[in-house]
Image 1 (cartoon, rainbow, N blue to C red):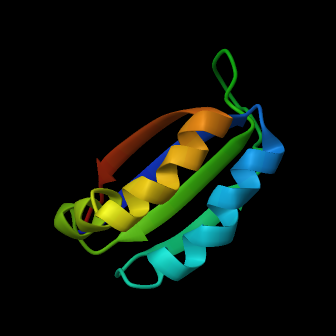
Image 2: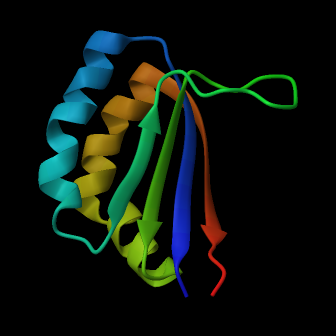
Length: 96
């Protein structure tokens, strides 16, 4: 069953965050995911508000999403994201 990685990100150090962006594609390409959307100006329809950037990635399964996210190479890169931003990140099961 498909799985979606959803991140709401507030970048407070754009220069350091760029290091994360620069390394992302090379690592991500090794996994069976597809970046569906990246939006720096999402349209809020309800609620108190959201962080500045929304990222939506589709994976064929939770196992594949975790294989990417938990990989040592991604975790090494993600330290830049963690230092440069705050984020809410969730995995959501898709529907068939």
